[in-house]
Length: 202
Image (cartoon, rainbow, N blue to C red):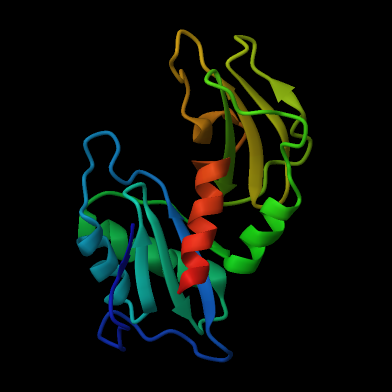
């Protein structure tokens, strides 16, 4: 269920550059409500509102936040959000920002064509903080057979998880090894479609 907050105004947290029309962003957060790090969505939305972001809403408990901003520098906006979340929650929260249009194009490309989700197969989109390193081998299958990285674009990797003994034995955001210096946060393909639908309702 989508929760709605009122539009926030400017405040002492910082004033963003406003050199263009408002863009609707989806913030995919890592490390929210996992590993004992629990945050209520009301608190999470309030942290975004404190930054002067507009139309702040959240979707389910895994860290998906919708908002509007006229700030044009996405990297600076990402850093501002990450810094504020770390200060407010007491631990780092990597943030991957995507526009509604970017997620629409991603899903329209059907990156898992020919592969079906089953009780033992999970289709995951891993949103990346930076592109995979040059020369990263794709496609790539783990020696244990528990995951496959089918491909990637500049901001997303397409990962198939094979459950073993009914369990997911690896965090999909951690499948890239030590050569990758960025962060990743994963969402199921079907969940991403629901997130997009919820974002567009705003």
